[in-house]
Image 1 (cartoon, rainbow, N blue to C red):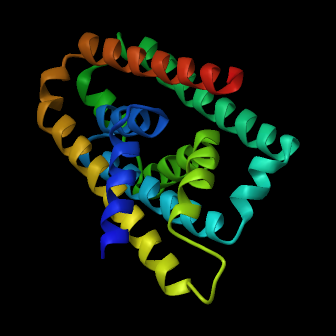
Image 2 (image 1 turned 135 degrees about the horizontal axis):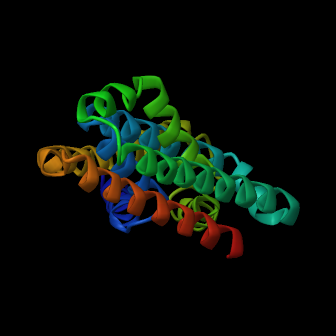
Image 3 (image 1 turned 135 degrees about the vertical axis):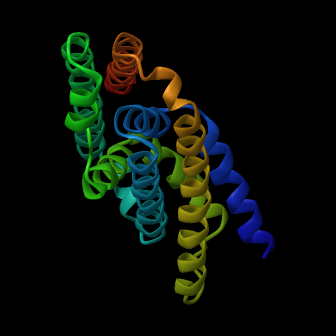
Length: 206
């Protein structure tokens, strides 16, 4: 239980630091509402569980050790963030002249699309490779079968990260009505898109 609590705290600290996952939840919640933000959070949480398992069986270590593989993940992650950010900026430009009803109809995301965006954002984050490669050896060793512990850590990581981003989506959903005016919403969408482009460029250059 102590191990799980310490791991939960480590995941909590990682989740509350603003980064690509944080920005993706904000973007999807602002664009399509609280439900989309929560599906995005679920995708991020599932991504965390994938990283826990991948690190435990050595895949993340292989990525970290291979310069080519790590570069591929980094470039793919950066390209995805820039792509999503540019789409947000383009949408912001278009929405300045569209009626509010048309905007609400046109920006609905399906649960799968929101979940997928959170999952891809998390899995294509090269910093996750570094984080979990450094973190997991503190909780997993090479002695004996530890699949039960790995499963517990994956469940804890998924739950803690998802709950953090559920809360974020909920808070943004509560104040979303403040941004119902097309010009304000377009401005916020443009800023969010710009942040995601900047994050993508930062990932590419790191």
